Length: 95
Image (cartoon, rainbow, N blue to C red):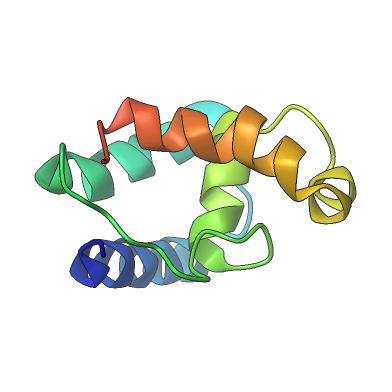
């Protein structure tokens, strides 16, 4: 049972970031995620649906770590988990 505050806070930050700018380069997305994720480094983070590719936080995660199309990730949960979501969690040492 993870800390839902992490997912809620990072999701709120992603919402604001995407209001200010619709599309992010990999470097820009990593910069935003680093600002959102560093305070939570090492947390037992729980993201619920916030990290899905169609959600604001998921869109930032995709921009930062994705190599395939969003459609490919939407069709294959394992691909999303292994190639994108795991890299995101590893970057911030989320448990």
